Length: 111
Length: 179
Image (tube, rainbow over all chains, first blue to last red; front, side):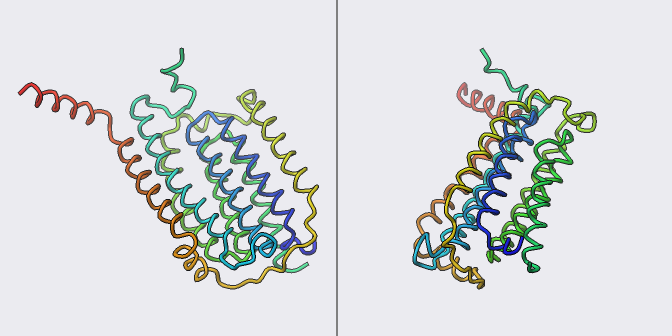
């Protein structure tokens, strides 16, 4: 386990695991908020990838010190914040019209 | 094995367990609380990778803001305490298979690549460099994100307006048309 903190594949495997658990939650959860939590997990996994590559492979990716990975991870966080606002609006609206936030029950358009 | 290695291992463990409970816990409230664990562990890993600004932003935006929103939305879920573990396990079969295939693909790519020529990380404060990058090479992307944030917030306000008020507005508009 020595050198784990600078071992890039460990971070990549961990973020792949976060992404996979997020995928399970996003596809398998019944409630809208559970799906949203899965998407948050997936975004976190992707953001961690950016930062791990920036810190441990910076010289291989680009020969400047603009911290590209950090900037992209910051944009991921900002987009997650926007997503949270829109998701809460959708949850509020769904609850207002149907008295439930179960995604399976929003089936008015089913043929 | 240094202290940082132990901290990173702890973050991996905490994040993995918390992500498992986020995906599988039948009680959505406990799943949201487990999500806090995973987000905090990612913030810790940002710190271990030398991204001090991102670690702080992760804690402030995710744990402080988004988690509040999620816990607020959890209040609208119904009978969250009645569900059992693997009660509707059938719904998780296809997602679990899809996620297992995805994870196997990522793991295969990661482990088959050659990571030998890694760079030595240098740990310096990043806030200043990120600020310069946001007004330098990333100025246009930054403006784009600002516009997306604004339109997303306006869209959220429009969506969240109560339906009753919309109907009243429509009726008032019709009345104005008749007059």
